[in-house]
Image (cartoon, rainbow, N blue to C red; front, side):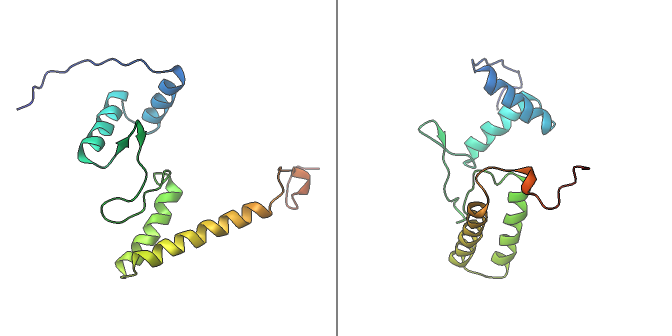
Length: 129
């Protein structure tokens, strides 16, 4: 049975990394120790994989594609849409093809935009002038 005594650990990290950790913990209403505990639980359960000092990005055991930024609200909304297709029995290769089509469409839209944003080109800007 694990001991209930609390232990203190220490690690040296850059100020930039500390600020990132602190900001993430604060925005998710967590303490830094709770955030580290959650990350460690993820590593031990296999939900988070580390390979050669980097997070491993790939496909999880259920066949779902793992995306770096799927923890964002937009990513969650998109993933829920694909879960609907999975529930309807669509094959994973069809869903992966649809994901690629969506990403290609975004890339095409971005490539059509000017290289730099220029407010004067906006037709609907409301600058009060």
